[in-house]
Each structure stands twice: as structure tokens, then as C-alpha cells.
Image (cartoon, rainbow, N blue to C red):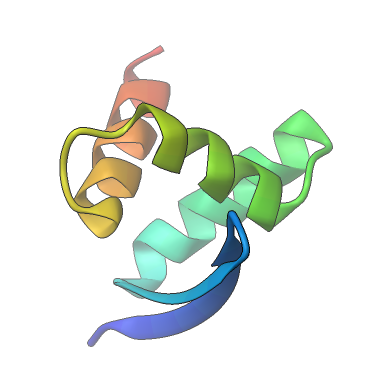
Length: 66
């Protein structure tokens, strides 16, 4: 089941739906970087070439691979 979270990215509100496991990995990445969820989403958003939810999943996968 997907869980939605809302963020403001470049002044626009957006909702992102991910599986709970991805949100847990995302939260761990935020904590490891001592940043905010919005800052990390913004960084991923600026570099993406795919839909945002897909870009987050790929980013998390790449992070897990080291």
C-alpha cells in the first residue's frame, strides 16, 4: 500500500506516493545527511529525468548500492 506525503518544491505543493519501505529508507537517508526531507526531495527533483516518485526510488537504490 502506498503512503502519500506532501512537500513544497520550488514554491509548488506536490504529493509523493511511495511504499512504506521506501519512506523508511528515505527517512534514514535524511537523518544520515542531517538535512530535511524537503531539501533531499528538492535535490532529487533537480537531477531527475523521470517522474519524481521513480526518481526517489532509483536514488534510494543507488544509495543502497553505495
